[in-house]
Length: 206
Image (tube, rainbow, N blue to C red; front, side, top):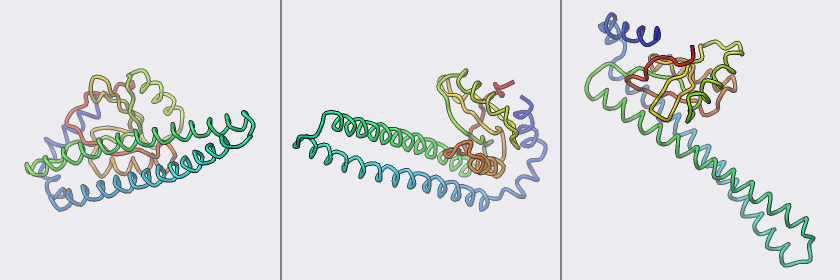
C-alpha cells in the first residue's frame, strides 16, 4: 500500500517537476526502447522455435527411415519419445511468444494513449512472471525473498485470474526497466518485462 501511496504522492506533489523531465520526447524514446526490446525477445524466440522445428523435421525423417527398415522397436520408441518432447517444447515457445506479444501490445497501447492525452505516464511494474492463482504467485515470491535481491519482491493482482510476481510496482518507466534488466542479469527470468497499469491494488505479498 505504501508503494501505491508513494506513486500518488509523486503525481500530486511533484507533478510540475515530473513534467519538466518527462517530456513527450523522453516518453517516446522510452516507448521506442521498450518496443525494440520486446521485438528482439520475440525474434529470439522465433529463431529458437525455427531451430526446434528443423530438428523435429529431421527426427520425423529418421523415424520414417526406421519404420521402413528392420530397426528394433526400442530404437523406434526412443525416436518417437524425442519427437514428442520436441513438439512439446515448440508448443511452449509458441505460448510464450503469444503471451509476450499480447503483453507488449497492451502495454504500448496504454502508454501511447496516455501520451496522446498529454497526461503523466502510467505507473510501471517490473514483472518477473505471471500466475493464474494467488497462492502460486505468493509461493514463488516467498521463495525469491529468501535470496539477497537488490529490490523488493511484490505480488499484484492484474485481473481476476492473473497475478503478477514483480520486483516492485508503481514505479517510473525508467526505474521499472532498470529492475527488469536486473532480473534478467540475475537469472530470475529471461522473459521479465515492464507493464504499465493505472491501478493494480496493493502488494499481496506481506
